[in-house]
Image (cartoon, rainbow over all chains, first blue to last red; front, top):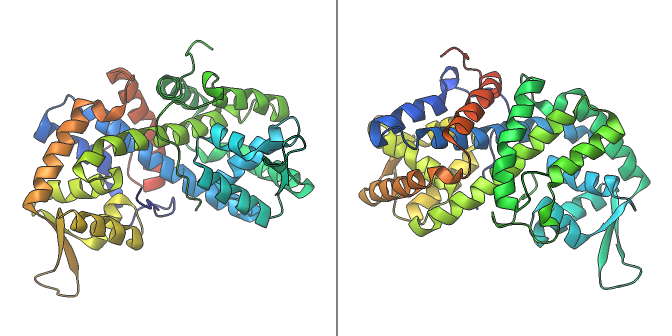
Length: 181
Length: 181
């Protein structure tokens, strides 16, 4: 996959004053009719917004020695009943490959937020265990993110709920859980 | 930034039958009240859906020697009036750093879809120029993506337009274009 490292959430330089995705939508209709345009525009909007949010969240989380992916892994441990999870479980929950789990846990270990320990009953299985420092960072980072509503400005509560409900249909389809739960 | 390489759009193994984001939402309310929960759930949903879409799109685009980021760069060239753009312009349009533009154009060059040539009037400025093969790939890839509506199944036309309209507010805020255009 391409290293799609986008520029910080900062406004674009240059052609900043146009909605480039809407412009692409107009070109789409001209070239291919209007059948697929709404899906192209929505998909591209999701990609761009993901990059904006990731940049904003990483900016905030930097002060806690976290990135958003590491924050997600840390919160899994923080919210788990034992404060620990097998590495495989973390990959399953975050839907990331084993090598990404290794990187995430390495990052948390370097910051002193988690430790790797062998499982009590099966010493070949490695657990990531949250440390006291990790708990403190999780709490402080969560307070910071909650305060700015996960950098979703200027969206309203209603906007957020609408997005969640619509995207849930796609997640249920891809992740295989029933929509009715 | 963490290499957040997610598993393919395939259904999760293991805890596949639960909506893990909804579950996180419940834990959020228990721990921190319900103020920030809608924003956490929406943000996490956008991140997950971006990964699902990226995996699905890359699966389709693989047959054309493309990834979605490379496809985006190729389409900028395809839709440009001269079939070429300065590298800096590509970075501006895609909101990616110069090193990412280099990688993208390298990928297109290796596939024979674009060439680097110096600008006529300023030989220090490099242009990426789409090749005939690149035009053909752009057309075939676009037909394939249009046919599956950019992998947005099972979302409806109405769902897609709603997402686009809501996310446009956030993009306008971050990218600095007026909402009214």
